[in-house]
Figure 1 (cartoon, rainbow, N blue to C red):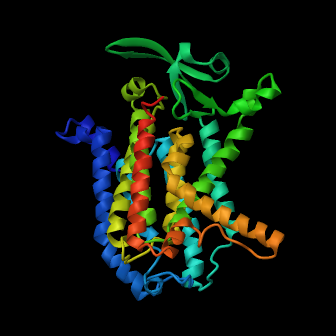
Figure 2 (figure 1 turned 135 degrees about the vertical axis):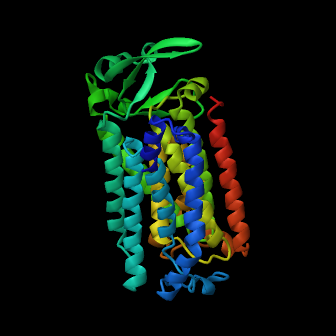
Figure 3 (figure 1 turned 90 degrees about the horizontal axis):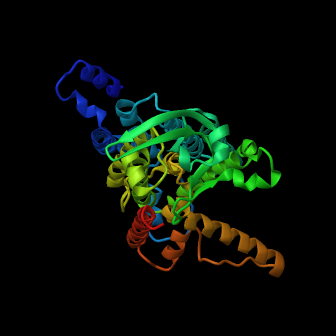
Amino acid sequence: MLYYFFQVLNDLDFSGAGLFQYLSFRAAVACIVSLIIVWGWGGKFIQILRRRQVKDKVRDLALEGQETKGKTPTMGGILILLGIIVPVLLFCNLSNIYVLMMLFVTICLGLLGFLDDYIKVIKKDKNGLAPKYKLIGQFAVGLFIGLVMYFNPQVVVRKDVTALPEEHFYKEAKRVVDYTNPSDSRIVVDYKAPITTIPFLKNTDFDYSYFLSWLGGNYQAWSWIIYIPIITLIIAFISNGANLTDGLDGLATGVSGIIMFVLGILAYVSGNVISANYLNIMYLPNTGELVIFAAAFLGACIGFLWYNSYPASVFMGDTGSLAIGGIIASMAILIRKEFLLPLLCGVFVVESLSVILQVAYFKYTKKRFGEGRRIFKMAPLHHHFQKCNIPEAKIVIRFWIISLILAIITLMTLKIR
């Protein structure tokens, strides 16, 4: 909203109004405003949750310090969502299709998590929302993102005509524009194709339609059959991964902040023609606006970490964890970096795999030997380390360090190709 206000002031030549035309300035302000909303209002919000007895019933897992967690209020994810949505509405160009998609993901998954928390906390049903309904909600959000990414004419990739595959130039091209910079002059084209970036490989973009090349003929026209289900699964998997990671004070919050910082950088270089050409990566017009969203998300995580760090004064609940996982996955998909998620979101992936392996192995051994056996002392993985008598705060910091290392390696993929 303020974006349009200052745009009018800039047209009227008001001094300083032009600052709002810069992504970097709006991103910085969005981060600060988000931090103020979450950190500044967090104390009062926690008091409201305590007065209303908004506490989740903690299962007895025989873990150190667990008895105190049952007294800690939950549903603090509402703070995170407010810290994201308000600055985005204030400082983003709300006509941008990428911003609208991210707002849709944030609100929908936030409501899905809120419904789960509401059933558990207010309705006193410890099972919460049935897992199948959670998956249906996540798949619905993933389906929406996949459909918009595939069919919306504003979602394009810009490349040199000479570098564009012939079949896309004749069948997918929408418009040709002249691109000129001080050192180069080229003809480029905006075109639609379900492509993404392959890490560590130079000048190699992966086209999802390759899976259907065996059909022959106009097989690219059917690539949505592959693309949309994969996008849907990615969003559901990372969303659940963040949800599983949210088991220790500050763990999911800190890891998510690190991940989004990297995604913000990737969004900036992908949406800036000079940076994209210099790094020889896909130039994605209009994705630069996502930098503001990433900055608001980062500010919300930092502000929430003030209250969520050990010992936590509030938990985010599924209201926050389901949303932040879906936001991270969607952001990577929008900037066509979803193949980087297994690396960048390594903590989420490992936490999810630890649960999958634990359950699968337990069922297999129970069927074969009549007694279920475990790979880990407890899953998700962070509880395994708790069972090894490692202090909770140390586990969290070590997971942050691992996430930071993965973030650095992810950024290195921009040059190591």
